Image (cartoon, rainbow, N blue to C red; front, side):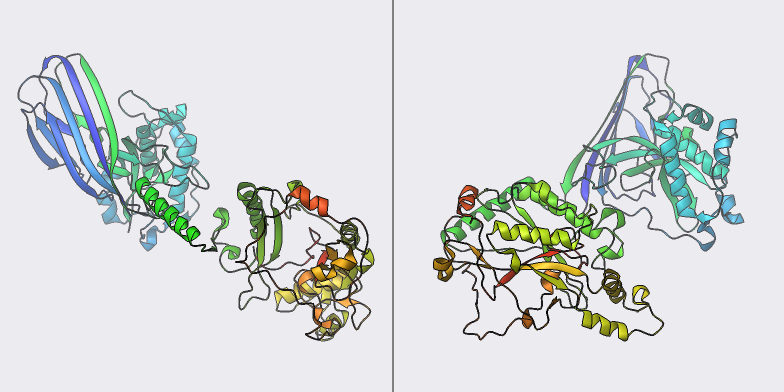
Amino acid sequence: MATHVALNHVTHYRYDRPVKLSPQVVRLRPAPHCRTPILSYSLRIEPEQHFINWQQDPFSNYLARLVIPEPTREFKITVDLVVEMAVYNPFDFFLEPYAEAFPFSYDAGLAHELAPYLVKGEATPRFAAFVDSIPRAPQRTIDFLVGLNQRLQHDIRYLIRMEPGVQTPEQTLASGAGSCRDSGWLLVQTLRHLGLAARFVSGYLLQLTPDVKALDGPSGAEADFTDLHAWCEVYLPGAGWIGLDPTSGLLAGEGHIPVACTPEPGSAAPVSGAVDESEVEFHHEMSITRVYESPRVTKPYTEAQWQAVAGVGAEVDRRLEAQDVRLTMGGEPTFVAVRDRDGAEWNTDALGPTKRGYATELVHKLRDRYGKGGFLHFGQGKWYPGEQLPRWALSICWRADGQPCWQDPSLFADEREPGNYSDADARRFLDRLAGTLGLDSAFVQPGYEDAWYYLWRERRLPVNVDPLESRLDDEMERMRLRRVFGAGLAQVTGYVLPLRRAGEEDAPALHGQRWISGPWFFRDDRMYLLPGDSPMGYRLPLDALPWVSEADYPWQFDQDPFAQRAPLPTGAQWRAQWPGPGSTGAEGAGGAVGGAAGGTTGGTTGGTTGGA
């Protein structure tokens, strides 16, 4: 899953006269401890008449010592290397037990070996005050280092500084700004004053534009980029040298290619040596090129491959359409909140504090993107084994011909906004609906929670348990009893209007009316809902309606999904066909439209079912 990147780095000096060069030391070869795999490396020197000796300095960095025997008018260094940009976890390490919490002290033998990296500079006023301001309260070592690194990234403004040398910590703190080498050296000295061994690092920084933009936080480089860079490494017992980049506030990753790691910045210079007095023209150039990209999750195919895949798909569609083959495809993408991806609602629980709100926001965005002119339906979804309640299903329905079937999206209820609706609101909604459909509002029937069932549940509670403060082990049962007894058993839960679409056999008596309704009869005077938490439309006691033989039952059959269908009427045609006021009674209507108190829309109750 790695990308191979070629880096080209040219450093070119042109002199106004032939000059003699002292032995030049070049530190532009990746260090032995570099964690990013180096696939190839080459160093080319001009003039061609030169001698090169490879060696390692006291800190194990690779050095190229160049001897140019004859005077020259130019000195050119060209570095080419290929790296494998395989992502690695910079936190993938263990610490010795005594170093897991800061502050800690190195054991005597290790401190002796790290002596060059523990040498502290002068504690000037601003720098001493900065060090004193760092909390010393015991905490996890990695948390302490991450916090300090991010503090410097926040406090020190990055700037490109062309002047040679490195600022002192005092200068960097006084100006509140510095180049990468300045903030890197400030962090080195800060860590040493805190008792931690640290070293200065010079190297390459490679940044590739991401395949996919980040959902939160910075998205990274807008284009592939490389430059010389500087940062800091701290020695942690058990982990070794760990890179910290105060310019970005991050730990060093696969894009950080160290070439020289030293106790002092001066011994990490990319090129050092003397030259005769002269005027010099300096040219510096760096570039990177992707030479190989393996297929990966975020970019499995090249653009040409994508075009080929799309072309095959179009040809398959053409052949299926020619043979009148109709297919449907379902998918269940999984969404996890970026801000709380480990929360129970995104892993085990059906619902949680934010899931339904995010689902509502998402369904509105999807409607605006794919289903303009459509309507929303929030109903029951899957019911998984072992869960007491079914999940929600949030649906978007629209016409394929582009004709709108809903005119005003502002009329959609938004569950994220609090609403306080009563049974009177539910009754008014269904009265208005009945009038619009030309039906008698006398068929609107109230529904109640089953008083006998909940009285029986109350009788089974321990004598010292209040139903409103139930201590039952089952959390959902506690919520259910608290809701029902809190509202009162005599409280109307909602209303229902029996509906059935008129068929051809009803046409002579209905005078063109499209919907019919009628009364529902129950053994009790009231319609008691089935116990539960689902909206009342899912808890209607339909098995308590008068018995009807199978021969007389008003069966309704779905139209064959493969049958040819006439085009849907336009919105204007639908409105022209809509019936005027009036009413027609018919017992045993086949469906119901519910209005419920306590919910956010006419078709939901105060209780909730599972997750979206």
